[in-house]
Each structure stands twice: as C-alpha cells, then as structure tokens.
Amino acid sequence: MYNSFFGFSENPFNLTPDPRYLFMSPSHKEAMEHMLYGINERKGFIVITGGVGNGKTTLCRTLLNLLGNDTRSALIFNSFISDMELLKGVNQEFGISMPQESGTKKDYIDALNRFLLDIFTKGGNAVLIIDEAQNLSRDVLEQIRMLSNLETEKEKLIQIVLMGQPELHGILSGPSMRQINERIMVRYNLKPLSFKDIRGYMEHRMIVAGGHGSARFTDSAVRNIYSYSGGNPRRINNLCDRALLIAYVKGKHDISKDIIKKAVRELAGNNRVMSERDRTWERRISYGFLVLVLLIAAGIAGWRYKDRLPAVAPAEDIETILENNNARSADIEITHENAPLDIDEQKSLSMLLSMFYNTSGTVIHDFENSYLDLVSYNISPEYYLMLKKPFRVSMSNTDNAARYLIIKDTDEKGATVINSDGMEQAVSRDFIINNWGGQASWVYPMPKKNATLFQGVSAPEVLELQRTLADMGYMVKMTGIYDQSTFQEIMRFQRDFSLKVDGIAGPRTRALLYQMVR
Image (cartoon, rainbow, N blue to C red; front, side, top):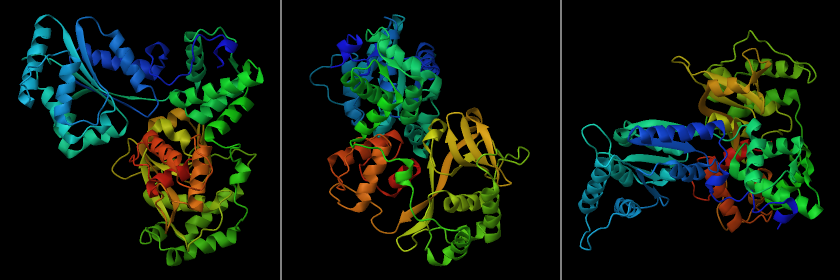
C-alpha cells in the first residue's frame, strides 16, 4: 500500500526469509563463517542456535546460495517427523530415486551411502540442513547420529547442520544424547541485533526494496524500535511495516518516535499502551510496615521456600539494606566501587526479598491469595534488557560456591547492580555479558488458585495477562476471554523465550511475563 509513496519496489519489511534481505551483523557473519567452515572442512556435525525471529531461516537460505556447485544439499524444514520420514525426505531432497519395492530403513540408508560415495569420489561434498531441530524426537536424533557414521577412513561423507532454538542445547546435553553431543565439532549461538546495528539493518532492507532515502527514521524512533524489539529482526520488521503504513496515512516521510509508539499500540491490538503511571498500584506501604511484614511472612504466607527464606533473610539484614536504599538520593550517584559485586546465596536472597518490597509501586503482599516464590530461568545474556524487575543472575567463572549479581534495573549501556554494601553501582553491558552465568531468578507472587490459564477461560486474570502481552507488543485484544488470538500469542511468547510451547499460561509462563513488564 505504501510502497509507491516511499519509492519502494516491494515491501522492505516482509517476514519471508529472502536471502537478499539478510543483514550481516557481526553475529550473523560469525554464524555464517562457522557453518561454512564446518561444511568445507568436513567437520560432520554443526549446531546453530538462536531465538525465534533472529534470522536463522534466512541465514540458512543464504548459506545454500553460497555453497559451491560441487556441494549437494538437502534441506528439511518439517522437524515433526519420524525417523523413517526423515530418511525418505533426505533421499528425496538429494534426488535419490528409490526402487518401488524399497521400504526399509536399510534400503534408504544404503541408497544414500552409495550416493554420498559417488559424490565424494568426484571431489564433491554433501550437506544436510535441518531447521527447527529442537522439535526432533530422540528417535530421529538417534537416526541422524547414525547418518553421521557414513564416512570414509578419513572424511565425513555428509555434513549435518542442526538449526534450532536455544533449548536445542539442553536437549543435546542430556545423558541420552551424549553420543551425538560429543560429535558436534562446530557450535554457534546467533544473537539479536545490537543497538548500533538497528539503523544499518533497517536501511539495508529499504535499499534492497528500491528505496532511495524517502523514508527517514529519526534517532529517537530508532531508539524506540530497539527498546520494543530487543534487537529481534522479526519484531523490527513488524514494527517498521506498521510505522511506514501510519506515516503513509499521515502523508509523512519522516518516521518519528510518536509514530513508532502508535505502531506499538496498534500491534498490541488496543488504542493505548499502559503507561508507567497506569501500571503503578495506588496503595503504598510504609517502611515500618515492610519490616513487620517481612518478620511475620514466614508464618502466614505458606511459602514454598518457608524452610529456606526466613533463615537467609533475617530482619536485621533486610533493615540494613532498606536503610541503605532509602538513604540514597535519586540525584546523586552513589557507588562503592571497592565493595564486591558478587554476592553469596544467603545475602542474594535477602536482597531480592527486600527489593521486592521496596520497589516503587509494589503494594503490600496479598498473602491470602498468593505466596512468594523464587523462580529461576536459564536465559541467554542478550535478553538481559527484557528483564524489568530486580533479579539476580548466577555469575560465570566462579569457584565452587555459587555467586550472584544483584541487578536492580537495566538499560542499553548496561545495568545498575547492588554491591555487597547494598549500594547501587553502574556496570557496562560488556560486564553483564561476560559475567552472565545463565540462571536468572526473582521473587514472584505465585497465585494460590487459577495459576494456570487456558483457552476458553474468562476471568480478570486473563485480562491482566492480555494487558501484559499487549505491553510487550504481542497482538491481542482486551477481552478478558482466553480466546484463539491469546492462545496463539502465548505460544509465540513461549517460542520467543524457550518455554514449553503449549499455548497454556501456566505458572512459569506467567512468572516470566510478570518479570518482563515494569
């Protein structure tokens, strides 16, 4: 609709995996180099992972275009298949004709082996690429391992590239997958775009689409795009497409931050995105009552961690932390740079509890309807910006005892952490990435009832769930009914963040959503 207005020959922000539109960010370039190295050097197994929408499929199609004429390729997109369907699909992709009477695994493997030997004797190579590999069953993975046994005394006859979401690492790390995991010679995790890559990515796509600079995104618009998308190319495409449509309707060639904000609201499916003031609870609690609540919480909350949390969060420790936090001025940067940033298990739990109660906007805890839980997730460091409430993350490269970073808030430059003296200290993004151990935890008010929401349910909790999804840019309407669109967007959220994809808003899905909205 807007192509002629901006001078595009085609839509620059389509979601189709067109290799022409691949933007080679540093991470995408490294991923491509890893794949080409693994294939050309006949390393056998190559694993490339990355979050949903980070560009794995587009990277895959580009790889096929870069392979030489002496390399034959087979591409499997449907990963919900049986081991026999895998063999049939591989042979079909390679163009291997099978006798009509063939029907056993041995028949297909023998035919594939003959084909690969013929390619090898002619100086060629063969590569099998399987997309969405995290969906493969264990039987199919075992069959793939058997295919990797097709080799000469010195060389692998087939190079196998598994591309999937981050949970693929966890699957391959399991005890039953040890044999296949030990054969993986090349691994790479594809990261979202960094802030400095966003404008280059957008301009690259507009140039490929035939644009000549008539669509101009302001600097503030780009910052808002990054804040909304977290560097995820698919989200960037959705947002830019909608923003261009809004600008076209307004007759504007300059896309401002206001247009981006309007695009976010429209993608969310409602007329407004809740402001910080909308999300702030009206009730406030005094410092004295906070201490009282923490003292009596173990007796009346029914916590899952009742045997653990009171012991690690004595009132005197919490009181000290609260006093330190309340003593600081928002206008004065207070740092104790000599105080350690790595916190032990006990103190980190104490700090998390106190920050839960001391965070602006947090009301007195509703002990009757929920209990406080400590939830933990394995999260890749590139997603740290998505975490909006105080949390702790395990530190990498520590000795035997677990140590944690206590992170109060995050921004594009890094984060504000709480040191061992209970004082705020700014750290860089590189510091966060380099010390990120993987497991992030936070205090979550776990509902005692109706912790699981599913399709067909109508309840106030569903409306709150829809508001949270909308705030994050997922396309749902505020109906209060767990309808088909809510089901689909919950599945999308679960895929985006490597949760179990079932479309059900269970405790873990809701706890992660809770963390991702201020």
